[in-house]
Image (cartoon, rainbow, N blue to C red; front, side):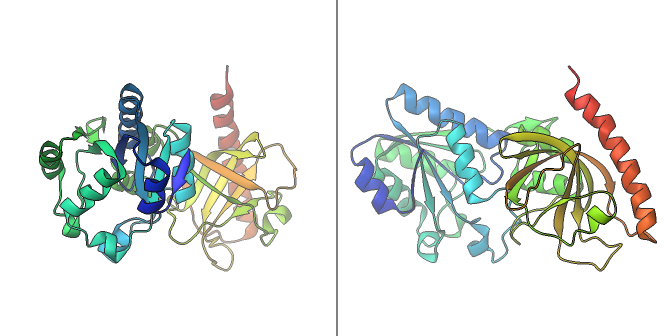
Length: 311
């Protein structure tokens, strides 16, 4: 997949090539986003066009509302997902005051100037200065400028419209199985394994520690059954998300205890998939009480492991 960071660079590279474009934040690339991407790819293939995602390095709310939501994915993770779905290219933009200040007509003209022949968006798409542009505006623009436009209807799971904001709420409540239904895959985070205090090793549960950037969402503090991917290998285990309240509270991080491995993981990139929520984080009266609970957690984790790996 090809990636550009400016309108000018993309136009120079793809001058004259018909584009099928979809636009949005795409945080989490959930089921609704996946429908948009599949449709964009299908239309491009049918029309001998170039499928293009226009998205942003940070959430547009960071500038528009001065308070962006915690992100489900990094920009790099979004690009990787777009690529696996077979999208041909991505225009990954900084959402600047200049871009935010374009009125709806000006923004759409930017896309047609690139070569957009079809624009495909979700049902709740808004754009332009003050977010005054909407799907009706897009369809009217398309009719006036001789291009095609499509509005993809909402995708629902159990009667609830799939959205990034709803998925964030589910994760912050520890409801990772419901979030998985909306994402069409387990919620996951990726980060290098960092050095910790080695306290887990002294307790009999050596852990790999991950710390995410402040703008990334962590699920509800607590213990989870997880599946991890490191160096091309798959492992199962437990992850504690939180601040270790039994000891001196610290910056939040993820501590992962992998079953049946002693591999040195420092510096390796680890992807952690959250499969099941076991319990909320809490403070224990002593390290010994914590160890007792950790043993119970491991028993439950190994029970789930047998279910997940059966057959």
